[in-house]
Image (cartoon, rainbow, N blue to C red; front, side, top):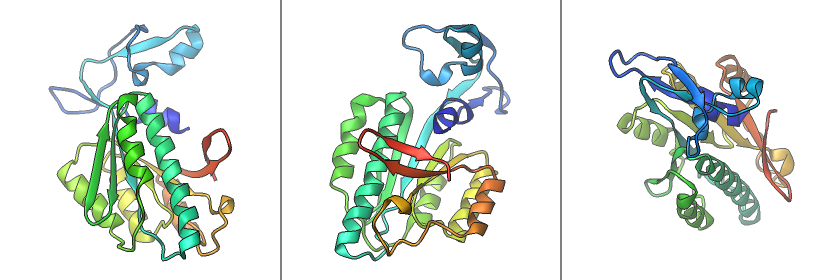
Length: 233
């Protein structure tokens, strides 16, 4: 499901003249080097060969990943489990984005807003090295960071929120962004896969209902020996 969001729904096709959303204008056979997000997946499935989309407007296809680095006031042992889980999930998602040549921005809070940018697998090592050494802390500025970043860089894009604490205040903010033409995805740690008693859950039923009715997908992270899987609760 996330792949479909990245390759279809997160595309922002803007007309140079009217600044209104426009559809692609033509199709053609896939050429080596075409971005995967330009593949017309439905026609490809029907025809049996890859079909690419051509656009008359300007296409901006990028994703902002916001990682919540609040440490939840966990004990030392539980914090290690929780932080490793979140970081591994974030690394996996960024690897997927860069592998599909999606312009990716990562933001996290630690003594100020930290930012990394990459466009392809060649940039993956930057994200891996920084996230591997990341430790969470007790300043809770996630919502404030989201506001600050989007005030400076307000172009509509796909936003991935990675957090454990889905508060009503945060969810209301995400719903407003959704209705401002941002594509939103929420990724939470599946606490059922973690041996951390202090983490009770990612939000109450009202919070989840608001996200669902606003068509904001929620994904649970699950790790096994071979892969990181995003599942739908």
